[in-house]
Each structure stands twice: as C-alpha cells, then as structure tokens.
Length: 389
Image (tube, rainbow, N blue to C red; front, side, top):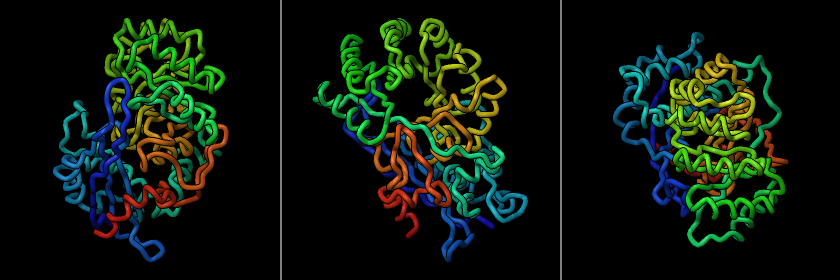
C-alpha cells in the first residue's frame, strides 16, 4: 500500500463580486490528486482535494515543500496498522515534519488540500462515503440523516440595486433554502440597514437571515452595528471585527444579545483555542466557522473538536465556512451544526452532489464512496484531467 503519485493544478474561481474587504476577480484554487496503488473496480484509487474560497492557490507551497515531502516519506510510515489503507494522522505528521509551531499562514491551506485528498482516498479504499466512515470511527456509527445548510450570497456586485438583492434572496427560497446570508460592512451602516430591511421583506423573519462583515469594522463600528441589529433578531452577526483580535470580541459579545459567528479565518487548533479562551463567546448561542479545508484539514479539525469539548462547547455550535462537500461530509458524520452553501458563486467548488435537493435548508448525503466529487459533474470535470497525468 503506497502513494504512487501526487498531481496538482491551479483552477480559477474568479467572480465579479466583493465583500467588505476583498473582491474575487483574481481568486484561484489549488486542486490535487493523490494517486494510490490500490485498485477498486479495475482502477487505481485517486483522492481529490482543493482549497476553500477566500484564500488563493497554494501551488508554490505544494510543489516546493509538501508534495515532495509526502512522496519522500517511507510508504510503511503512511499506512494504518492493517497496512491496507492510508492513515491520515500519520500522513499529516509526515507533511508537518520539520515545520516550526506557530506562524500558520498559508501552509495550513496547502496541508488542508492534501488532507482532503487523503480522506477522499481512504474512504474510497474502504468503499464507503466519507460521512459514513467518520460516523463509524468517531460516533459509534451514528450519522445525522441530513445537514442543515444556508445560502450564502448578498455580495456587493457592480451596479446591483436593492431590487436585485431581493430577487437573489427570493431565488434561494425558491430553491429550498429557508435561511440566507448577506454581506454588510462595505457601505455606510445606514445604507446596509436599508439592504437588510429589504432582505427581511423577502425572508420574513430575522432568524432566517445572517449578516457578515468579513472583519471590516473597528470596535466602535461593530458596537454601533450590534445595537442597530439587536432588535431584528437575526440568525447571527458574523465576523464583525478582525478575527485575530480575540479580546476585542469580548465587549461585542457582552453587549449583543444575539448570536455572533466567527472563526473562518483561524487556521489551527491553537488559534481556535485562543478564540475560545479570550473572546468572551457564549457556547449556548455563538457559532464557530472553522473551515477544515483551510486549517490543516480534518486531522487538525478533530483536534479542534476535542479542544472545544474540553471547554464546554458542543460540535453543534460548529458550522464550517466554505460551502464544499468535504465540510458537508464532516457535518453529517461528526454531528456538526450544519454547513455553508454557495448556490451561485465560487462554482464549481461549492454546492452538493447533482440531483440532491435542498428541502427547508436541509440536504441528505449521497451514498457515494469518498467525498462524492464524482457525483458533481461540473466539479469533477475540473478534477478529471489530473487522472490523465
């Protein structure tokens, strides 16, 4: 049992949208294929991975450091005790050999890409969906029957008026979503409040709407916005300030009665632990959005879940960022609170397997070995050329 090859490409996910901090006109993603010598149904098993949106392709790190390190490792050090499958924890350790602690930066993205591909391969070799493998390994076989999902959109488009914003949100409801998210923080608060009111006219009640600042506000601006949002009863108020300024979250949590969501830009268990220790977040209502594809992968995410449990947090408070199938499998298999979804942007990397309907913001998982990329035709068309190598 060994890894025979690893291939990577850079794929564009550019879009004419912006949030309060960045635009996505030049966004890219790394896509990798981990080729094994295991044969299932007459073909070598290949695991696929990619990085989540919001961070650029990590091709330099992959090609210069992490792929060579993986291929240089002795094959027997990368497999489980049975010798019949890859061991994600041992592979993670091989990838991180000779790496200093701290200073996580973009290396967490590169490792996360490879980790995703490894888990895809592991589940395919076991001939089960990843969500089933995770439930069997970590929850005594108990998998959720579906995952709660919400439609993330409401970006600032060029020349997009309030009427177009309302039409976008109405289209999500028509497609089966009952909860939606929109961007704020990119225009003056009074203007954003008018946009929020317009969306509430479409979705009906505040608990069906999330708003996302993408860390744009100062503390004074975040508190002013919190005061304005408090009477609306929104589902959550997301990333109001810089995500690494942990202590500055505390006065917002003390003042805002509703749920605060954050964590998508924290890329390690240690960063997540500092958030829990110092940000004043409340385990009965706040939402943690750590994205396994950006934060060293599922191996590190499992450590983060253990840390959260030790601090009194339920995995149900975790709703990963990214809208990808990897996190969706994790949500169902490990009993998280749900997953983000991008119905219209970041294609083809977001979304679910083809022909999987959204019903009242819930989706069921297909019975496809691995993560299920092969069941999403538009995405697999990007991955398939890696097989030809």
